Image 1 (cartoon, rainbow, N blue to C red):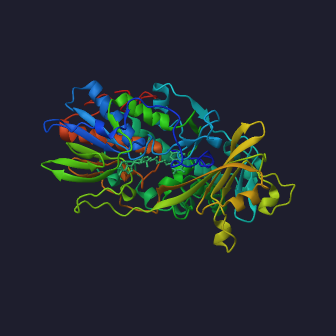
Image 2: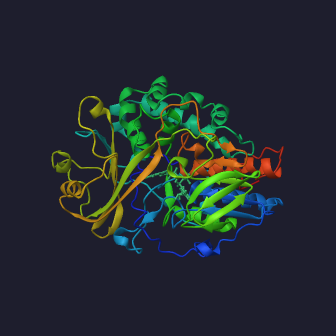
Image 3: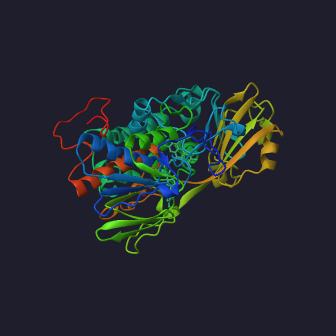
Length: 505
Ligand SMILES: Cc1cc2nc3c(=O)[nH]c(=O)nc-3n(C[C@H](O)[C@H](O)[C@H](O)COP(=O)(O)OP(=O)(O)OC[C@H]3O[C@@H](n4cnc5c(N)ncnc54)[C@H](O)[C@@H]3O)c2cc1C
């Protein structure tokens, strides 16, 4: 999971305007190079080269490494010119400055696939510790501030005074319970699911997904104030949704941020490595237009032509992929949160208090999160979900990242930062599913041989969980078509603390 209020406060910007400054030799982007498969070939198609698609290719290759599975080729189709689904930008377009994530910024040690991948692929993690404090803004008032960052608030006397002892402790306990169950997904006895509903039941999470975060925490004895301030700040920064709107499983994920890190230079490198090491054929700049049954296989039509596959993994949110599926396949409508990410550089070391209408003596923390509580009570709606400083790019310039529901205008930026704004970069995402309490999810298997990795996103939406979803799908695909699996049959329970299913079997 990603989970931390300062998560989103990390770098972001615009993929459309961005050219990756590296070469990817194994990528195939020349449209003439595509080889039509012969009818006898067993090929798998994967659509999307984000967390889901790239990891699916990797899991298939891990199984092939261990067992002799007769798959002739794996073809990955990606409409963008880069891998990763989400990407990075460089302040002023200058690749010698630190890369700033436009989309997913962080993961945590308990995200064992991401963590393991960084180690196996010799990438470098970087901390996202916030040193300069956190504030909760309701649109008119700064309700609560710390000086030492998100993590220290649990211990802070100020927090104790405002929220008491029980609410933070009870919240932590409830979140720890969720995380403990999450970790069973990496054990040799991991559940395997053909429906997300079955997984919810196996992990005893039915009551989490069917209630909102407020209902869940109130039932745990957590106070209204703690929920409407610190908890809602987390759900708003992580998922752009209020605590009374978002289901409690995703609410709990927002609150499980211990040890958040990202990959130095950009998280996309993990997904690039997944693909590189998988040996799959990657077709960039290639949009898939339709998937249809053909003689017991699947015909995939892209702007490169059409090919036939034994099985297809859809690793993109279908609602926005514009892929035509057979009419009998029904994927429930899935609204996404439309998010504006605004990156800027400024010579101001912190946001001036006057910009928020506060006395000039007020120190504004480096990370401002928000609550909707003021608006609920007739006050002003905060103009952003989060506004946070992300370190220096030169001796006197800082990078700031803003998440908001509406476009942040130049005028607004200039007013807020006293005209001291340098570089500005904007990106709009359909970022995460709208996640109301529910008891139903999209099908994992849309039809025999056609699988949907993003069925997991309305359950939990993170990079890590997309790799877990793909792992489960690859296991299912291998079982159904090749009588195989990623790890093979084992009766031995392997429970070493660092055992990770899929990697260590
Ligand atoms: C601003 C923001 C912040 C976030 N922060 C975090 C975070 O800190 N931590 C975290 O874990 N998660 C975070 N997330 C969520 C995370 O990014 C997603 O859960 C994850 O990227 C989903 O991965 P995916 O591979 O399923 O989909 P995507 O990343 O959306 O990848 C799908 C790919 O499919 C391609 N595609 C789509 N249609 C077609 C087509 N027709 N033909 C060919 N290719 C197609 C797309 O171009 C894309 O590359 C954040 C998201 C956003 C937007």
